[in-house]
Image (tube, rainbow, N blue to C red):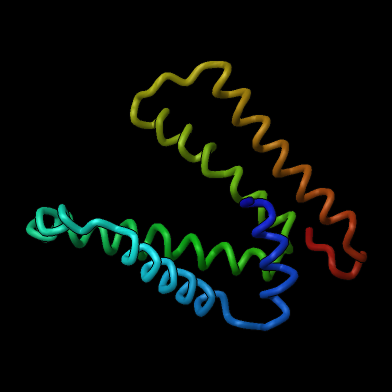
Length: 140
């Protein structure tokens, strides 16, 4: 489903020329309404009693996490196309592996092989995209 969403966004949303920030805002707003209709808010008072937890949830997870991710999603689809933009989803596991290594988790040959395969996959997409562009549109 995630892969199909890139194609949908490229085919149906990019031609509308709606800015990525507007698309991300609409998506988050509609999702918030749907979530509010289906969520039990019984434990919310305990969370909102701690201002640090509440602000971390709203700013960290909501705006900086999900909001920025949706903005980048629409921006990349608009700028790079569906296939190249979808390669960004391969970077999250790589970043998680590196963060884990930085905080002391085990990092062996299997983890190194996984990072190498991810990097080679993203590189293959980039090289294939560059080859499919006309020479005047290629960047170094």
